[in-house]
Length: 285
Image (cartoon, rainbow, N blue to C red; front, side, top):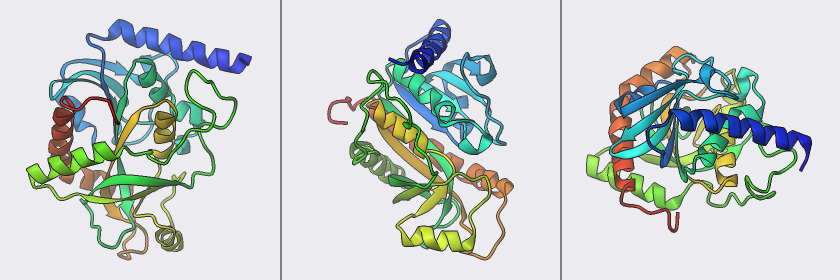
């Protein structure tokens, strides 16, 4: 094993030791809460708050709407570890830093990952406030977090991405949404680097290649999660229609505002999903 990989393993272990010393319970589910969606972490009971800047090896989130801390405890009766804010490639972090928290979750034995994000709507049947189950993704970030030497103890050199988003978890969402009478869409998420929003011409291109929503996160995290054998559920909050769809100009404040408007439905949906997962074993996921 190369010196670089040994050093990387040492960093992960140092982070794990720090977090384990702080935990009251071992988490079973990992959650990543995107822009404007971090309020769900406030409902965690018996919480332990770990600011990113205090955790060895962790970068620091610089994006408005991201609290920048890990929160552990129980949500809907299930032990969880929640990222209240994530890291992005456009912040200047290398992909190993962007996806570092996923490696930590894997080291803690977490097998299920629920990822949320704020995304721009490309599908013309969507509207701001729509909730989309991610069925697949397109990686247009120009890189991959697995580039470089592979650690076999983390995962295989060439991981299969056929079922990057777990079909069984998607069925759970549909059942919960139906029970709550919450309308959910389904679609393909395309990941781009940002931080500039896309041009109208780029959105027409993305629609032509099969994308329903676009954002600047999630894809690297999901690749690493699959590499490490985790079952992934992805949910996008469509906070705005992408450039050229309505003719309106885009800004991040509107993204946060729309996320705040729909967060109650998203909150109810996620709580229902987690509650449902108490009855679902990892077998077959």
